[in-house]
Image 1 (cartoon, rainbow, N blue to C red):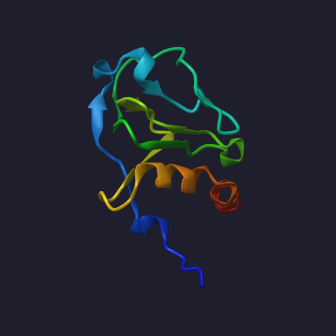
Image 2: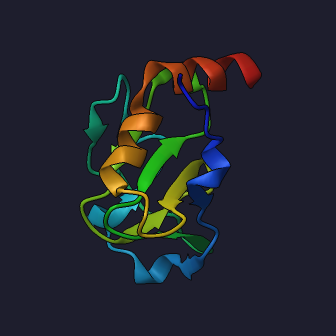
Length: 118
């Protein structure tokens, strides 16, 4: 028998903010530099001029929340900052393996659900 577990029971949305001045270009993630079809991340063209971005940590999962059918997702291999158009997911505690959370979110079922409910 398969048990369904709600995503909110194993992860949390990260809402911690940092100044964009604390983020290097190579460590900035936006919907523009997340690659479609789960292909990862490219270098951002530029940083925002001012403001705050969401702080992410190595091992977090970042997903574009604009046009989910593009399937833009990245498993962070370093710390950095993300635009407000990128959702940052982190396991609730050490009982959830970070790789597992990434593979759950990378699954087409997640993107299909996101597309249908957007």
